[in-house]
Length: 267
View 1: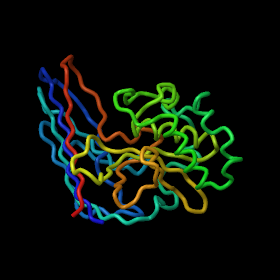
View 2 (view 1 turned 90 degrees about the horizontal axis):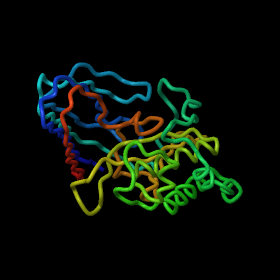
View 3 (view 1 turned 30 degrees about the horizontal axis):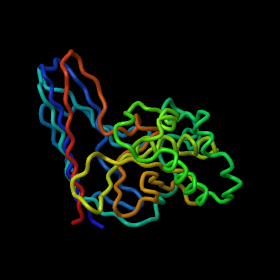
């Protein structure tokens, strides 16, 4: 399937910003199941300072704000060819060893509520893939998709306690639980073409677990499936902070408003 993606992120400031830097992880990865045909990024109100590949093999762009900027706009546009690989992206590659993906982070630490989700799971499902799909179902049952309950700094344990969350929370809970079971697991940010609309409310998030002999296998907890041709992987990491599409800092006390416009459609 060929997908066309338009992604515009706009920041407006109520007073000029004297200095700011942003890290952008907005360039999709060419790996098993997807090939990047075209991709371009344009910046208004800022300057591209450098680009590099991080230890997760994410393409990172570092941009600075123009002096006294009152807005900054990042526009990405491209086409990606996808194939259905049942969520399997293959053997591990990159600078970080597999054991690195078994350690907890502040957002993916398995507390009592997360550990309760995996109780009895190994006995119930002795095989890896059925076990992980069963874990995905347990996470969604415990934390139904609910807007406005959590935020970007909500941990896995906090999301379970809230009893609701979004795709980011589902991925964090699933990753925390999978690591507690002894798996290497990672966070994925990217795009999902919805069947009933072109405009998307936000980018999407899911998880991948390393399962021998398949390698990395994806699980979209929010939708209860493994990624198919409607999904485009952009960045990976231990948690959201490693794979966030936009992160950064700025000086000054001005307030800000952010808007996101994402369109994903089949060509």
